[in-house]
Structure formats: C-alpha cells, structure tokens
Image (tube, rainbow over all chains, first blue to last red):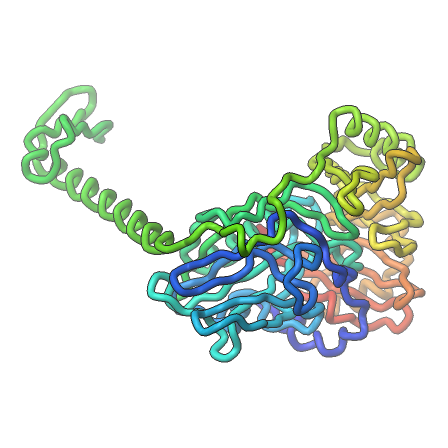
Length: 210
Length: 253
C-alpha cells in the first residue's frame, strides 16, 4: 500500500483548517479502568484536565503483546500532523502521567457511512517508553478512533465504525484481532453534540502486535 | 468421495478411530486412516479453541471494574428521540428543498437517527441518510461545523441536522460517493483531469468540487481504480496542481 503521499506532504497541508473537534464533549461514562498495576481513563481529553465535560473520544482499542506507539501507527499511516493534539491520563504503575498525541490518519471508504471519510486513531502510552507494561498484556498501548468528514472535517465521530475499520485493516495485514473483547464502560448511543457524532458499543477491540 | 464423518459418544484419538463410520457413495464403510485424520482434526480444533480461551483469559485477568471514587459521571443514558420526534425529523427533512430534491433522485435508507443535544437537552435530531446510488448534486451547503460552502459532488450520504422546535433543517453535510460515471459537466474540467491523470497514470472520474475559503476557485477530487486499488487525487483549481494532503490510496474494506 502506498501511503507516502499522505505522509510526505502532510507538512505542506498543515495550513488546511484543522478539525473543529477541539471543543470538549460531555459524557456520563468517564471512569478509570484498571489492569493489574496499570490504570487509564476510558476516554481521551481535549486538554490536560480530567473532566466528564472535557472528553474527546472513547478508548476502544488496545494493541498488546509487543506494541509501542509508533509501531502501532506504522500499521496504518504513520505519524500525522494533520490533526489536533489530544490527551490521555494514565498510570503504568508508577504514578499518573499525561500523554499527548495527534494520531495516525488516512482516507478510507466507509461502508458504514457509504462515503469517503478520514479514519483517525490516536494512540497513547507514557512517553518514555511509549508503551505500558504488565505481565498480562506485555507491552501495550491504548487508542481512540473516529471518522472525520472528508474533506472538510465538518463533523467527527462514529467510533464504532472506525474501530471496526481499524481492526479490519490490521487483520488484512496479518495481525490477530479480537473484536469487541472487553467492556470498557463507554457505551455511547447515536447522537450529536456540537460536531461530535457519538456511536460506540462500549466494547474494546484487542489487537496482538508481535 | 466421503460425505460425512461421524464421531460417536465424543470418542477421540485411537479409540475413536474404530468408531468412525465413513459414508462413501451411499454405503457405510469402516476406514481407519480417515478416522485418524478426523481425530487429529478434532484435536487440532480443540487445541485452537483452548489456545484462544487461554489468550482471552490471560487478557481478562485483573481487569477491574470502575469504582465510584474514580468515576466522573453517573453512567446515565443520554436522552433519546421518541418515535414522534423521529417522525417529525423525517417530515421536516423531506420538506427541505435541497434535501428533498436529492432524496427524490435515489432510493435511500435512514441509517441512524438520534438526538442533537446541547447541555444535556434535546434541541433537535441528527440523521444519517444513505443513498442507494450516488446522485450528482450542485448546491450551497450549511455544514454541521457551521461553515457555508458551495460544492458539486456525487453524494453517497447526507447528514441532516434538524431543529425540532423551529421545524427546519439547520445543516446538511453531504458525503462524497464513488463516482459511477462522469457528471454532465465533466468536460469543463478536462485540464484538471489531465493533472490528476498524470499523477494516477490512468483516466480518473470526477467525484466532486468543493469551493471553500481556502480554495475559493475550487478543489476538485478525482477517483480511479487500478486493479483492486482505489486512489484519490485532489487538484487545486486555481493553480492546477495536486494537493497531496487529500491525495493517496484509499483503504476500502
């Protein structure tokens, strides 16, 4: 797959309007999840402020085994600068830290919306070392996912469709995927808030990265 | 040609081999070699299932449910549209001149409908309408993000935002579809198509043009499929150059 055009010329396109999704959305499901000695919130945030009125998207993907942030982004389009920075608050057993990320992003055809959309995933882990670790998951990262309207980015959302799309891409490249494996307490029924279109079944997909 | 292999009483391995009956051309015969193969297959399947169970069990270990001390929110379900509100939203949508005109040209499906909420209160409805086949549309759009822009495109879906109390459509966001053919006015854009064709190495179809603050003269999108690969190229109408931010291979499911 040739993704170079998106990666190389991302620098040129930075002047293009950034998404409008920088305003925080509100959820009633923000909570801390714990795995072994690790903890992370089940949403990312639009600023370094843990608040249910300051969330961006639900955490809906876990890449585990021998994952790190860049390795996971390179399964898709690599690092992007064509997006706003968002934040995750997590603890790898040594205290809470903020991580920030713009994510990885590319154009896809969505069977969900029946149109071309941007597929955008932000990947989080304490940096350094850019991964979390516990004996159950090995080296792992967490991620949020959504579509952005193509090309104007006038709305963002459809986490559930984006999660399945990312799982499909990973699977097509030979990665082992466990779709909707565990409940992450972030079910969001279909609705719009600002330009945030919510849709998430609350179950996270796990992808094994060797 | 063996049609069926039977395992009786859940026996497996060597013991099972003598119980296996293989039906060949309507006759039941004993065939130990096939029984062994069947038993191995059974073992392999069992091991694979056990492996998956072990992986899932190990991943599941120690996932702790959220506690009240770390929960920011009451976990309540947001307000949803009732059936009357949905009917009202569809009625308002169909009576909108722009949307009504588009939907009259193709069969369509209301794929999703939900509330438009502000401060936890329903003020309207959001709908995702998918068209059965793309429709070429030229119009002025007020988008969900609040921007106004002009566009010509093959439309595959519409996001429609309806203010229920004012009974009016407040935003329409069209989604670009795969172009089924060139639109009627495509010949106007042959010079732009030549730019895209040079980049793609094949003659693409025009998918749409967007006229925005950044591209007042227009940004044209061309699509081409080469083999099983689908590519998109955006051309700046004013400068006649490819805009790489919007150009590249499209990943399709």
